[in-house]
Length: 336
Ligand code: ATP
Ligand code: MG
Ligand code: FE
Image 1: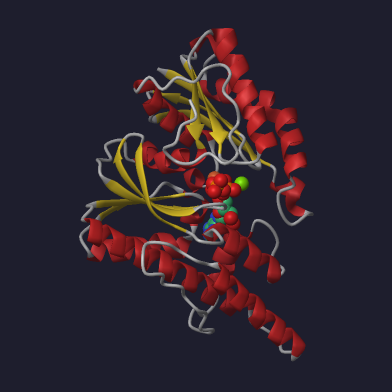
Image 2: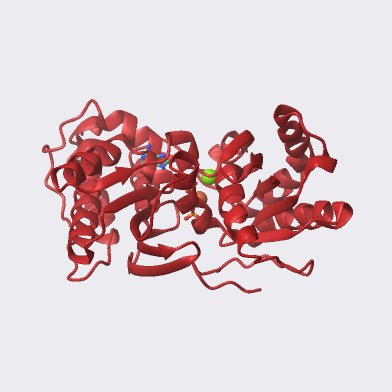
């Protein structure tokens, strides 16, 4: 089965071609980062317009790189939520047009489900149940996967997502956008024990990062008032350590308490070096197996959507051509 997958939920326009769900024939990702950089974040209206401008070219490139034509496509998968409504609509509309013209099934995929399924691209034999730490720009959740498409969210952030905290702190440090990769890089040269930032250990599996974020901002303001110079690398390293400590501790705790033997991670923040290495080490000590997608499959891409779409196709979860974008779509709650 050949699947064409599209992803336009935020600021990446991406098209991928997959064979039998796990073999990525092409995965074209056109990032709009330079377009939004001067605004310090994604401007929704500009994002939608950019998607419209380049989606056809990105699809053509994905087909060409995969060495196929439209006639070879057996199904079309597309992100239909969560995300920016205008951005999502571009992908959904393009996917509907292709599915209708070729008379092939249309599959609507939840973006977060896609992030999780990036793990099946690297580990097709992944067996249930497993726990997934979802850490992205808009989400921070611990999800228990019981079977394909069967999700139980056992913990979530009560305020900021981890990626959001990275982006806000990076902005305050004057590093630019998106902040995660910049802090990651800068932190490597800093001392994580330089500043003791608060870590929120809520009693259940929930997370909270707004207190940490405020604490970093207060620290910066105080330093500015006193005219003190700050060491940005130390600050980045200390902030990053505070975030990853909580994420790692909670994930290990949940895995042990639930008795799961396998843990994976997903989402843009899963590209973070400290988090990748730290979690791997701690889970190894516990004898729990751990998988992580390569960095390029952690951030937004259409290959992960195609993979999740393939398993929905196997379950015959075909969307009607009236499929609409659902900006607030929840994991495991299909709208069709
Ligand atoms: P969501 O997936 O929740 O809808 P999104 O699609 O905007 O949100 P992703 O593309 O999955 O988010 O991830 C982007 C986020 O990941 C940004 O917040 C970015 O700063 C963060 N990020 C990317 N690379 C790194 C890194 N190396 N370290 C920390 N954070 C990172
Ligand atoms: Mg993005
Ligand atoms: Fe994402």
